[in-house]
Amino acid sequence: MAVEVTPIEGVGAEISGLDLKSLSGADFDTLRTAFADHGLIFFRDQSISEEDHIAFAERWGEINVNRFFAAHPDYPQIAMVAKEPGDTDNIGGGWHTDHSYDHEPALGSVLVARVLPETGGDTMFASMYTAYETLPDDLKAEIEGKYAVHSGKHIFGEGPDTYYKQSDAGSGEDGSNRIGNAAVAATLEDPVHPIVITHPLSGKKALYVNPAFTRSVVGMDEAASKALLDKLYTHVFQGNAFHTRFKWQPGSIAMWDNRSTWHWALNDYQGQRRIMHRITIEGCALN
Ligand SMILES: [Fe+2]
Image (cartoon, rainbow, N blue to C red; front, top):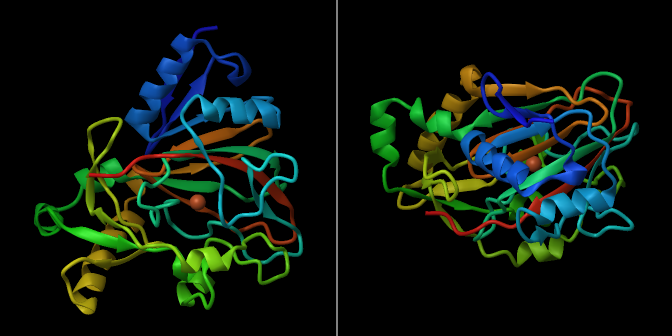
């Protein structure tokens, strides 16, 4: 089987012609290049166990054991991204990128579909490479050399703010205990990251702020900071040309780069069950 990398309109590439259970070194090199270039790779018709999932993730780096999401009962490396028929909100139901609240944000995640709703439950992705490239020149100049503060406290900590209600990272208020460990959230030291990063794998520039975890622009007052972030977010929200809507099927796997993409788990399947297994891989400081 020859590995094929087919770029997807908007963002990402579909990888075909391989079995994730038996990847050769050459296949993995192809994946690594595609991942750096596209920020999102996905696979169809795979059949992998939890052990296979862990083994695949470990080829990319150390696994980050999530501090806030409920873990798989037998495999702590796997975070459960679950929504039961009685749940109303979901995990990741607004545009965001994971782990920007860490000093060394995670490289990305490998998400495996386990139980899918009959309808709905697609995931949106957006390219932060293209988001940056397509910014107007004056906005590029405005963010040049600027930094932003990121935090997870308002999402994962006690007394979450209104953002949590609108398009949150999951709640657990419905008793599902999908999110926990609020005490740890309170101890997070909020990091500062450049608003434009040079991607550690590709060397390309990417826009690195997101509506869930970016709190303010360093050196600007609250109103100016909010105005600037809103301009950047509006650019991404309206950037249909660099969005992709990924439709999950049994056997689908997506791997996204947190540094060069945003994602948004659509919550349009009330009363149905959706169970995904997520493994997150450690990243590095961003410059
Ligand atoms: Fe997410």
